[in-house]
Length: 127
Image 1 (cartoon, rainbow, N blue to C red):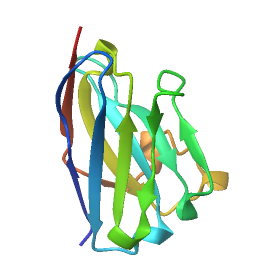
Image 2: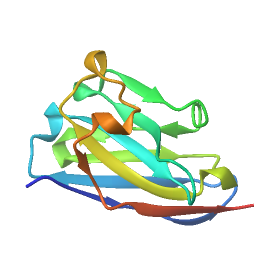
Image 3: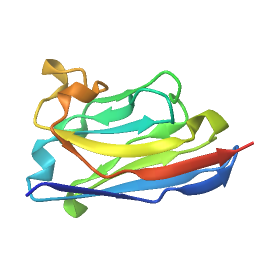
Image 4: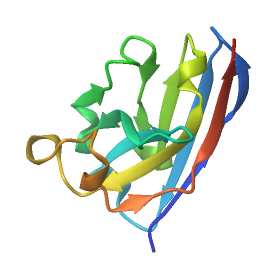
């Protein structure tokens, strides 16, 4: 049974940093592309960052380029989202997701490409 468990959310002041983690189990982590998505109240879920099978390809939403990175540790079956220079508009529930598709056959920032989702972790950035 596939499980994705996010952690690391919290409250931080603008300009600060947080690192989210997503612990994966129940499948071969290294064979799946992974993504981070977020959803703020009243808004649609949006893709924030994604990383392909093997980690050779990454993609980021324009709003987070240069501030967020998405490393993955295959040995620990864990995906991360390193968030720096946080802004109040980054406030949202953050979700990790997994898909068997790879970057050349999918838009890895699109939620519909993903089969498995975690329960989310809240990030709140104050001004």
